[in-house]
Amino acid sequence: MGPPILDPWLILAVVAASTSKIKIGTMVTPVPRRRPWQLARETTTLDRLSAGRVILGVGIGSPGYGDFGLFGDPSGARDRADLLDEGLDIMAGLWSGERFSYAGEKFKIDPVRFAPTPVQRPRIPVWIAGVLPNQRPIERAARWDGFVPIRFGDGGLVRPSAADIAEVAGQIAAQRDGRLDGYELAVWAEVAKPPAEEIGAYTEAGATWWIETARPDPDWWPGIKDRVAAGV
Image (cartoon, rainbow, N blue to C red; front, side):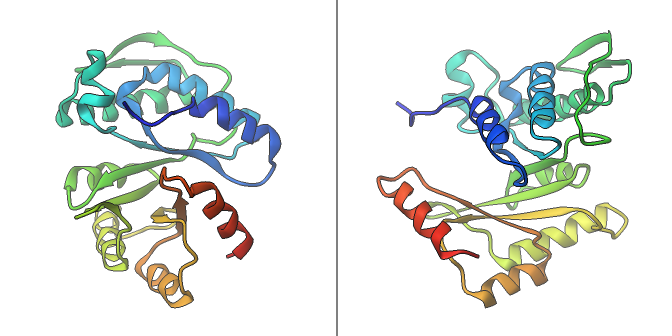
């Protein structure tokens, strides 16, 4: 039995209606588990509701059986990666507001035009999440707007190091003609106030975002409140 989970898009709609400045989005949405045209509608609606504050974090999803095979969906990592790539191409086409069709290995779409479009143009920013040191997520991320490196250690998910960020930044820059202007590199961290020198090391490595995620343990809510009270 998995942890209790609520629908993220309904929750984010409430957040969007209750805020005016913060960026909002998912960390991360398993695109292979969703119909791309439905996800395009949901994200467009949220972007309009939030006046253009959505960032869409995406990945292939995990675990393969628990999130996919259990429900009869393709569970292999390669299948999920292919579904992610085609799904992103479809969403970008539908977000454009132009007449769009698609013919891939996983999806085929007859000519269609989606309206309305997202507030953000040319589209909603897409950040790719991927497990290091796998290369396909890095290559995929270089084609979009940001990357969220994921690192696993002996005890499970761990924060990527500044050296990890620097290496990834170099790899992505090499695939973008040496430029990272406007590109986002996010450090997916635990809920903790890091020392200033540690933040400095990540900044020098090329990180542009520090995202803290509470782990599902009994003390997660007090930890969040303490972290907010501590400030930057």
